[in-house]
Image (cartoon, rainbow, N blue to C red):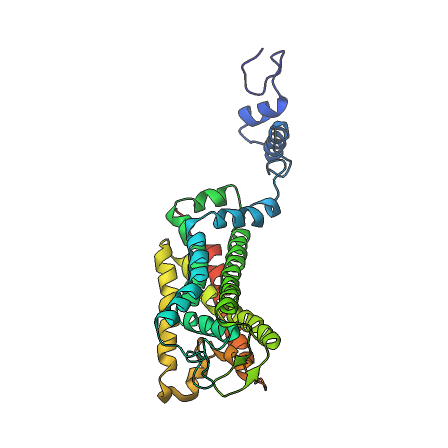
Amino acid sequence: MSDLPGGDAHGARDPRVDRVDHGVHTDPAALDELTDAARSETVGVGSDGAVAGYHPGRTLRLGVELRRQLRRRRTQLLLGLVALLPFVLVLAFEIGDANPNRRSGGFVDLATASAPNFVVLAMFVSGSFLLPMIVALYFGDTIASEASWSSLKYLLAIPVPRHRLLRQKAIASALLATLTLAVLPLVALAVGVVWYGAGEAISPTGDSVSFGRSLVAIALGTVFIAIQLAWVAGLALLLSVSTDAPLGAVGGAVLVAIVSQILDQITALGDLRDFLPTHFSFAWMDLIATDVDWTDMASGVLSSVLYATVFGLLAARRFATKDITS
């Protein structure tokens, strides 16, 4: 058998190789013809150069990413933390001096009046820091953690298209964040029914809402919180594609949320506070009333969606052009 390049079993050379090797004026068509022939003879490679069976839509499946994230200690600790919070609040009220028959005061004073009131309190006390931190942790850890583990470049080399990688990571983070946010009111409701009974929800204004209607209000309030925190998700995602330090991305998003809440307390800013992403964070509490005012909740949803859209587009643009070295 011939060892010559392009030779067959009888030692004959492919005339296309002769045209390439010996012709000073190499025929471009001969080069293309030879390249196509070699490619077609390569096992597992299609005519378009892609590996046989490869399809971008089959890379980084959502189910696989979700199972991977659920197995992480971070996710398990967050779920455990929000499930434990209602028990901590009950213990605090048992140790303290709570009056279950109180019919006036703020939501903290009314927390032990009924299970719905207890749920409202749990969502209220966690809304300033804990819930934004949870969302920031899920989204800020998406891309930055892969970069810190030096596994991001291998994901892209599979290859997983960049837009699909970012999208799948964001969807998985959104589902996990929503799950974690939903665990809090569900556990708080169960704990509240056991300790304080399934009574009416009482608002600080003195309005009483039936137990069944209060459950609808709590469900709508949870949906509003999830949508309102979308701006935190967008910002954390933008920071996650901009740094290789997960803690920096998470901390940056939480810091912005805290600064926004501080600025919202400065009444001298006047109507400028309406443009702060956290200004309408607690508008969901208007649901515990006989006559619900939807104005602030609609404004909160619109504001958060706009911020989230801007941050999300910036994150996609940044990740599409970023030089991946880790």
